[in-house]
Image 1: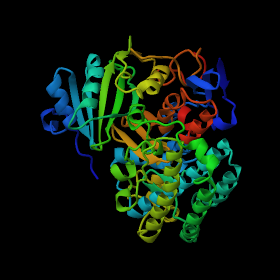
Image 2: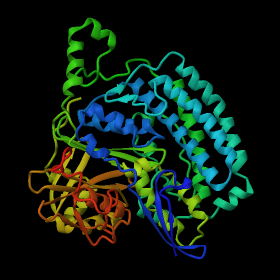
Image 3: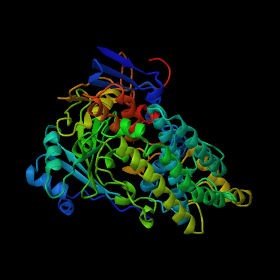
Image 4: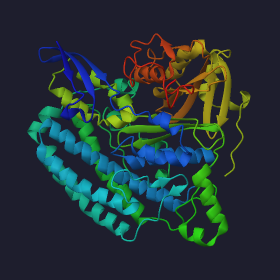
Length: 384
Length: 165
């Protein structure tokens, strides 16, 4: 029998359609059908100036807009050969880890709710609200932040921001304990996750898995540590790895990543350098407001950047970052003009999605929901 | 920070194991090479791409065991028009390499690399859908993002972005 699941289905986390060929309760074949959210962002980018693409990158993935901002900015900065001041780099790391916590919290809450533990959802969204308020503090927006710009940051972090982050990181580990108390030893949770949707390391690599999904299968690879960007090499943190490759392994890795992210944020807070937040490149970076009121050149540069953009030297760059879901990468091709010739987003979710048939085929239909939750998909990123 | 000029001389780049391996295997398959901004691109002959990929994947010294991405760039109106781009990653050696294949605009066909990496499946379907590049040997070459009955390939440069044509 062929069973249609989605595109409107609460546990597909968006508009994902799955075609399930079933024999009784067992899945014989699973076919993901995607594209319901395709908006043609890659095409849209080609019609915008480089700096106008930044807000578009927010909209790819509503759970980690700052990671996408960062990845795109790093790619263009590499094309331009810009040097980013240390304070901006450290702020980027700090906010990126807050984004990771934010994304993992939404994942944990919805994943637990899919499997039947409703309480966790409310707990997770309580802490997520805190993080969104911090994003609002720095950027004025809760979700579509666009806070990272080509060449640095949009604004200085406001007064009281670091204190607020500090309060949050001090109390957050006890909240993670709360989630773990509800789930990690819960017999129902263990029954639904242990040994479910297992995938071997070899299959995970062959099928293009990345991020927690890859590490859950025992492959010790994290772009932050192994191919560092934005001064991640100056931070000490552990990369959690599990070998079972099942839903529980991916759960435990993400929970441990919550704690590691806190450790990174604490280091960033303790060692936050002083100095500028924008690169010294007047033709690329918008001038400070104060300068525009007093200096002719600043006003001219501002006018030029807004109306004509800035030319980027010819070339191509593939920049990958470790997003909460895996390897998020931007491939930007420039033809020497002020608009990108091609912007391609390598979506971690799209690749991770290819594991789904392997995870589910031959197993029970009730486990599909657990499997989808465990690879943490965001359809906006898959369809773009 | 001024940009270092691109290195395109094959002999200067032989220290990169991927290039050395490909040259030792079949130097006619390597159509060109470029090293700029710390990124290595190797142009591969269209007929050799699948073998080149499986060679790099199975290399014992530096196995490029992970396919990060497959995408395409349309250089309309120049010919050869399409560049299909493969981003390979070596998880044990933490290294990347970019393979490129040039395809003409009249019949853009290239061998699928799904037999080498099953992960290429969705990437190649996306390139087929949005650029109209066909991958021979692909198990299920259907549209993935656009509706099944869509006409045209939106990411081509000659695709109209406004009005009716």
